[in-house]
View 1: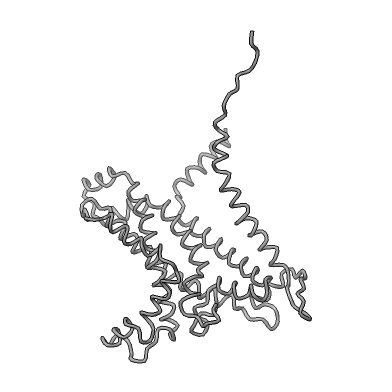
View 2: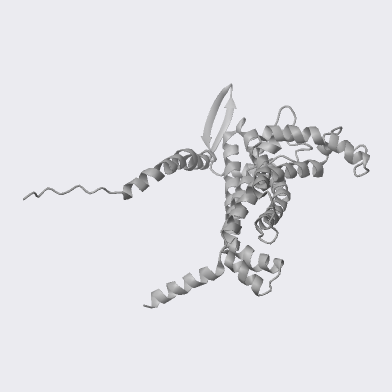
Length: 323
């Protein structure tokens, strides 16, 4: 009698092998740098007699960047304001236009022709490099650029108007560039969400006599919540960390100073500016940006969550506790 056990192949371990690269990459290139950033934010870097010294500073870097320490100004708050303004003027139109495109291109009654080509066209700007887009828009909207001159000839702008010297003009153009580059990507995400909704629900609504607006308000929007939440959170993270377009669009040759009058400088630009002189302060600004991003993401998450599902789970937990 052969008592040898037959070797059994365990297929469950292959799942861990397949997901291991993601976790290894995350630990090495995201989690570890994040932990290091918190550590460096407690250090003070200074030079004396041509040599660099490092000392433990505690929360002093945070007091300095927030303008609480004597003789320091809260530049970080000004740059956070710049970032939020440019993100808001890009993000709100982006969501609205993307929702409109998603509903329009998936409406079975409208039956838009060439939807595949339209999806490709609206997605194309997102694959263009930020440097190319910045140079293009700066040439088009400079004081003597073709679009600026056309608007002046039509009497829409004053003859001496310069987008690059105007705070509202520069911020508006940066928001326009970001909207133009990313609304296609957002539209495709929302289109995939609409296509995932059961068509039978829309047919039932048509039988009940619901208008297009009511179907959008009471069917499409509630069922798009998971995709909308993902879109809102990722847009918030990307928007608060915006760097490439503002850093390339309207800056002097030295860079990292958003003109005019530092009004288009973002938090990420400020971090890079500080990194060349004081790593501790740069890390402290990074921590502040992380906290703001986390707070905005949590607000979006809790405001967009399914409250009915949460109530059901809470009731189930209470019922289980009574047992």
